[in-house]
Image (tube, rainbow, N blue to C red; front, side):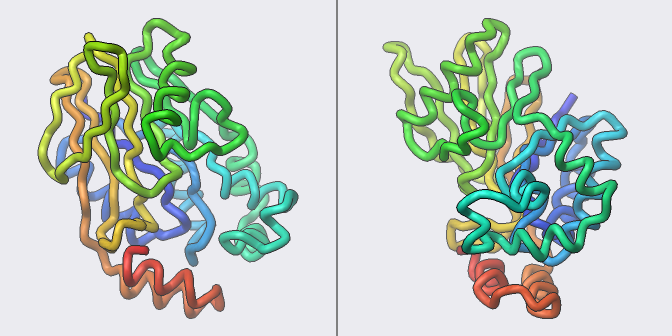
Amino acid sequence: MKIALLSDIHANLRALDACLAHAQASGASRFAVLGDLVGYGAQPAAVVRRVRALARAGALVVQGNHDALAVSLSGQALAADEGGAAWTHAQLGAAELEFLAGLPLTASDNSVFLVHASADAPQRWHYVDNEHRAAASLDAACADARIRYVFGGHVHHQTLYFRGLRQQLMRFMPTPEVPIPVLPHRRWIATIGSVGQPRDGNPLAMYAMFDPDRAELTFHRVAYDHLAAAQDIRAAGLPEFFARRLEQGL
C-alpha cells in the first residue's frame, strides 16, 4: 500500500491534478490531504470538489489555516485579506463551505498522524520549521504510543526529522525521487511541501509518497503548467504577487 500525501494545494487545480496523476501512476492506493485546500489560487471551488471526492473514496483530509479563514472570514489575518480569503469565500458554494468547516484539525490511522501545522497546538498554526518546533509536534502526536510517523504541511518546504540515538531530533533534507528508509523503531516527522505554491525557488509542485509496508518515504517534484496557473490568478483579478509566486516558486 502506498499513501500519497498532499498539502497546501492553495486553489491550484492544475498542480493538484498533476500530482494526483503522478501519484496514481506511481501506485498510490490511498490519499491524504493535509490542509490549505484554498487561498491564493484561482480555482477554490474546483479544488474543494476534487478533494471532497477523494474523501468520499476514503482519503483522510484535515483543515488548514486558509480553509478555516475562508469559512469564518474573521480574525486579524482578514484585515489584510491574507490569501484572498474574502474572494475565496465568495467563490465557494454552501456545500464547499460546509466541507471545509467540517474538516478536523488532525487525523490518525494506525502508526500515522496527520496535521496541517503542529500537533502540539494545531489550532494555533505553528510552523514546524526547525528542530525545536518539530520536537514539540512529534512529542504531542506520540502521546499515542502507536504513532511512529507525523506528516504535516504549512511551511511549503520538504523536510524530514527523526530522533537520533540520544533522543535529539535530527534534520534531513531529502532528495526528490529518492526513497528514504523510515524504519518504525524510530519516530519521524516530515513536512511534505506544497502542491500548489512551492516556496523554495522551484515552481515544480510538491508531494510525498509513504509506503508503510516497505517503510519508505519518497518526496516528489512534479512539473505542471505553472505559467498557465499564474495567468489564471491574473484573470481572476487576484493580486499580481500571487501570480508571480507561482512563476518563481517563491
